[in-house]
Length: 445
Length: 176
Image 1: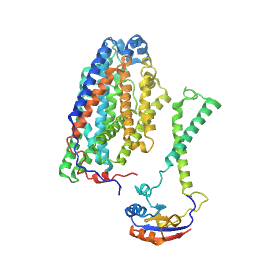
Image 2: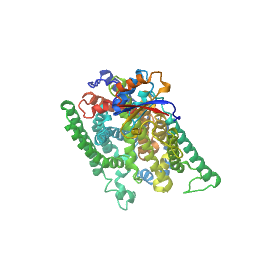
Image 3: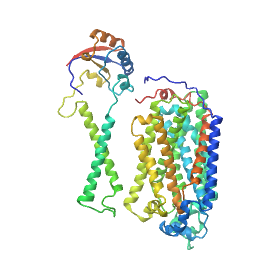
Image 4: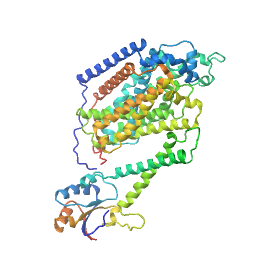
């Protein structure tokens, strides 16, 4: 379709400047310093919440249900600040795994739908899964060294019939929740996701050099294979990484819920990266219509996340079964009401704010508004995973201080570094993509 | 749509691309185009015609807000004031329970409101006799450009020539 705007050059290469590298280094160093300060403060009882928490621990442990009471009764007790470090690694590891893998998810469903509009900025989602090995190793090491503090089901006593800690409910889940199978699954997810990304990425890079539709058609097939794999592994990884922390509790919505959370966060990262690249003079071929569609994506999927969140909440709220409501009671009023703030901040940052800000047409292609909305979603979904993971693992000893900010900052800088170095490896616009012409003329006015 | 009066020049085009390119050309030549009719939406046409931004979004928001307020008022009054009921051990007025219905009525009011708006603004609906005013083929395979002679200073010949140059395959005159 004809459009009034002229098309800028498609030959451009992203330069990962030494200035940008230095800034990311500084950011990472600040993050590490914050972690050290936070760990020092927490280890010396400086964490504001923690001081109060120790006094109230007995009360809230009883409050928080059987599994925590059992954990306290078990006798061995890791220091709160160590648990906090493991839990922080886990929260960020899971969150950034999701963001990374969503890059491949986005590419794959765009291939499957033979969508043309997204071809021009395709390199951005394509660059994201390169971070998977990093988060994979973080999760694996965290599980091996800190899994005992995070996952109640790793305690052997639970499975001894007749033993003092025997828990028939958890023992019934042993076929799925056992350490070798868990580690096997964790490795399987990362190997398969990363391998499929590598294949699709290589096809895309070859296409850039050689041209033709053969690579595109192969990418469709591999992308579809990924979608089939991810259809299952997105749910199972959500159960493994997040839901199994609250071992007694389960929700049939949880796979969807985590996928929705990952997806909207990933879309926000894609949008933010595209907007920031445009700010730096790259990707001038991305026009208002692309930005508007990306804005719509973030808008729509923040509503989708809220829909799934609410569907899960409403069923539990209505049915009022004690074994299910404990999950929300723990977050709402358990642990001295500590999680009430993150609980509502999550809803505000992930629904109300992006919903109202991105509602009008113009805001979806206004870079400054898009940036604010995307950051809201990115921080909001960090809080989402914080609210999901912390109560069952750290419980009353959780806090939000330099430790949390530091880890988040380190992961953001590492992820940005990984994306930027991938972007610099190829022409920023896939010059031989068969849908590129359509994408360059994308016009939804 | 206001009642049409006066004399119109009607350009018939065969292709959406031709008509989209004809519009800026004609406007540059000084022709005032009233409207273009097409069997399907043409991207970029609103901009090319210089139509003011549609206010349909504001209308939709207002309809939705009305639905939202109606739903909440109805439920708060019936469940909480007129005949308080405790269902599932929840308070008579408990918002999580109300959200699905609030959502449904917001959507319902918006949908009905928008359909009504569509009928009114196009002069359609019960009791009106809708007929494509300029050319029946605008609902089939032709692209119709309507030019009101009353609002144009140029002569009929000049406009006809400009239309012909811009790719119109037929030029008709309509008198209302």
